[in-house]
Amino acid sequence: MPLPVVDLIRHKILLLQGRLAVIEPEQATLMEAMGRVLAQPIVAFRDSPALDVSAMDGYAVHLGDIGTAPLPVIATTTAGAMPMALQPKTAIRIFTGAAVPQGAEAVVPREHCIESEHEVVIEGATNRYSIGTNIRRRAENASRGELVLGPGCLIDGPRASTIATFHESRSLQVRRKVKVSIINTGDELIEAGELLQPWQIRDSNGPLLHTMLSAHSWITVERLQAKDDAEEIKNRIREALDQSDAILLTGGVSMGDTDHVPGAIQATGSEIVFHKLPIRPGKPILGAVGPRGQLIMGLPGNPVSVAVTFRCFAYPLLCHVSGQSGLKFSFPAQVHSGDEKTLDLVWFRLVTFKEPGIAEILSNQGSGDLAALGRSHGFVEIPSGATSNGSFQFYDWKGLTL
Image (cartoon, rainbow, N blue to C red):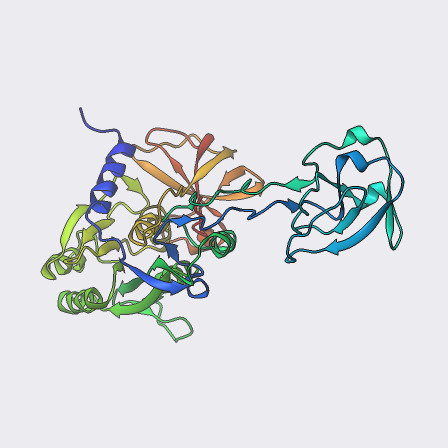
């Protein structure tokens, strides 16, 4: 029995993914590692907190002294100060994050106290406090030797904070940046801002891919162009293979006389894993692997096709090459006011959001409609045979991953 359309597509993408080389790790300082992919586990080198600390500003006391006469305040302790000792019938003024004095059983908040310079009166009933009130216990966040971060995550702000706290060494292992070459093919392409004739078009695919790739600090980008010439395309691919981990080509992947990309890829010793998928737009998409396990993707030439196939297929494969793991690349969105049109393949349809979580299908004139592309927030994946009303997977143009 043939595979369902979605499963067939997934199978082919996984075949390609299994052939790709993942970027090797290198040593970096934490500041150098920002925005990179973690390549080692992070294990707590000490307890967190390393000792009992106060959860708020107040007074460290013995429980039995609460509700008695005013307590003399014998000292003040702050975060970063060495631990003190608390004697019975006294109090120590304490600030958030400071080590709890030895012998103290609770921290009473300042708002429950009548304070003077040298003594404190604790207001309210004594039964509101118990041993450990307003104290963060040693190791309640993580114990020494505990895994706090696994490899494969992107080092953003929260992850950098975790590494700074729990990693003992000055350096750590991260994946080096993924080197991506963009090769735009076509005799008709003119750079933005240059004069052009009616039979020529601006190169929109190069800026589209360059911008989407450059938004990610774990990627470096180089752009190349090639005319519709088999030898020139082959040379550009060969040049890119010498210095890149991934190559994205646009145009020249169909079956026309000037579609030289498939032959040029094979001429460089690379292997085509799949060519054409049951999708719209982007059916001519090509996936290949280079001699050193490099990702090669031939994307169709029309801009909407490039945007959709890059976001849905090339971007997740680049994340795999970078060493990232455990990611989700889409999330459900509800489509209202759709239509009854269906296709016998997976249909990626541009959408815009009028309110949170509710998408509307954008009217467009096909895979060359850059006006509709510019108005869209992303696209939804409509399964084969389904109409466009209901809940579908939504892909954001920003490449958000979870």
